[in-house]
Image 1 (cartoon, rainbow, N blue to C red):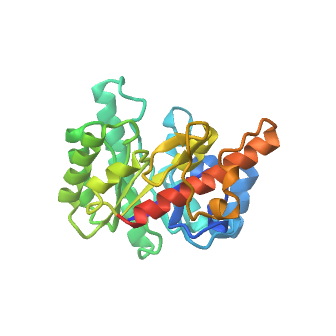
Image 2 (image 1 turned 90 degrees about the horizontal axis):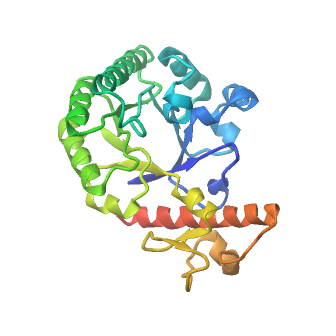
Length: 287
């Protein structure tokens, strides 16, 4: 299983790949804007980030106000050609935070996601499969996930993903993953978007090929480090266990250090995020 570290350019997260070998990064297109986007399109996403490993470029719906992308599906596919990531997701409609919308509207959004997946498939075939698109299965319950998975499975793609898992109980995540894997079969790769409960992956490790998480930077912002058993521990609570990450090998005393000045606080958050990303990466590699 691969761990794609979710990476944000503004404000910039640490460039983890300068510190240790990561599996890959997930970048949301919604976070690359203005001059940065023009620069990235001119030189390619790998050169823009100074990273030659695997880059998964999320279509970015989740990052826009009201989840409304300013780009059409065709515009996104054209941008993909210029940015040249390793993987790219089509335009989809997540349900996180949309639980109270009418049932009919949920199905309309799902129909749009399915149609965008179909358009992306046709585009892939016209370009001789040069640009791998990850086809995202959306849904708010088992029935909707099953419906979307069956529709997208007929497209016979190499890469699929499951969205809208943020805030979903572990037992429900397990059910959705098992259901989707049964529908798409064993051959396609399956990615999970936005997983925060990393230990839960043990229960579905044989069904999932990759996932992404922003836990390293989010935990660091709360002065938390990720322990070897993947629990978040505040630096002020008890004894900290150090590891073989670049930060601990350099100077483990920086993990519990306090910093009130803005510059020092930012540096400490950066170092804690690197420790957290390393810890999760090593944990996942043993699954």
